[in-house]
Length: 74
Image 1 (cartoon, rainbow, N blue to C red):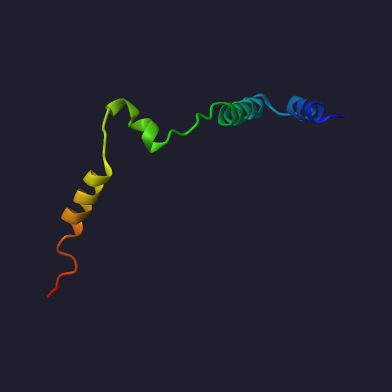
Image 2 (image 1 turned 45 degrees about the vertical axis):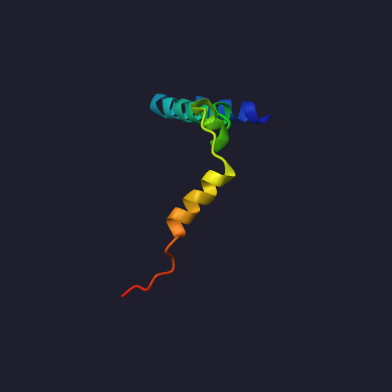
């Protein structure tokens, strides 16, 4: 007896409401394994925005953020 036959044999001995629960669970497992969409990178997510950030822009932003660090905190 293979796995599929064993599952069907168990299924036949369940009440109708439990058979429905098993079908719902099987559908959940199927959806979980087949509908995985690949994750997009941040660069891919922003590709359509046509934003060009240069190394100078990043350097300037860092200087603005950290320009007066460390300062005395009283």
